[in-house]
Amino acid sequence: MTLERKSEDHPLSKYDQDDHAEDTYAHHEPKLISDKIAFKFVKFLRIFADAFFAKRYGHRAVVLETVAAVPGMVGGAMLHLRSLRKMEDDHGWIHTLLDEAENERMHLMTFIEIAQPNKLERFLVIVAQVIFYISYFFLYLISSKTAHRVVGYLEEEAVVSYTQYAEMVEKGEVENVNAPQIAIDTWGLPSDARLLDVIRVIRADEMMHREVNHLIADKLSQSNLDIKTHRQMSDESIDKLNDYSSKTFPK
Ligand SMILES: [Fe+2]
Ligand SMILES: [Fe+2]
Picture 1 (cartoon, rainbow, N blue to C red):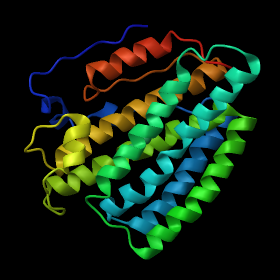
Picture 2: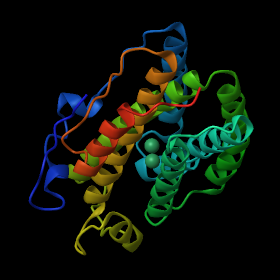
Picture 3: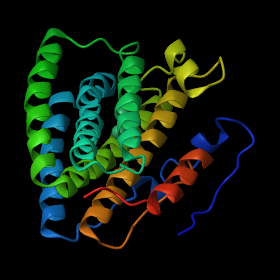
Picture 4: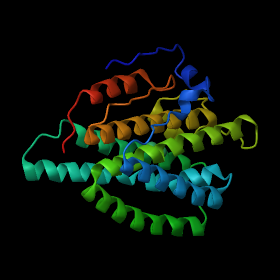
């Protein structure tokens, strides 16, 4: 499978077009029963997130990024242990998953500069971490395919939430403040980058996580590989997806 590459002139030019294009919301149709359960489960969680955070997207980003950074670390550790146990190569997937966890943690480090969680939210983060870490670990143990599918659907929701956040900034309902220095350094943004630029590059990361996790779930369930790319993804991400699609995933 070869995916088309896109090149842009300005480092940010590709991020400010087609916010509402269909493929921003690329959805992977649940095929297996486990996919359908994963999808319904994520939609169910979204009800709580929407009720709790409403339009406080900065706070939503901080709290949910603390959760988003967990699966990559759990999956990476599980593959690492599997590789030791079976004495078999991981085909580079451990790094892919650990990179995802690190990337999500950088989202958190960025948004903590933009929104400060209140005491209730800090408490919620601790409770959510205990529950989510343990349940994701056991889910991965029982069905890594379902675990990656859950993450794929969580990332679909992350893309929706960041698009809604971007729309609020565009409409002036949220101030388009200067980008935090950590975001400028991490994503190589211009020094005059603003919050909207940060949201868009982070959303492009979430698109990548969405595709990688759905791709892994497809590989584990031996369904046809169903990768979707978006014009806002970097050339590097598209190259990586091409590469991942040809690599064996440890079972
Ligand atoms: Fe994230
Ligand atoms: Fe993500």
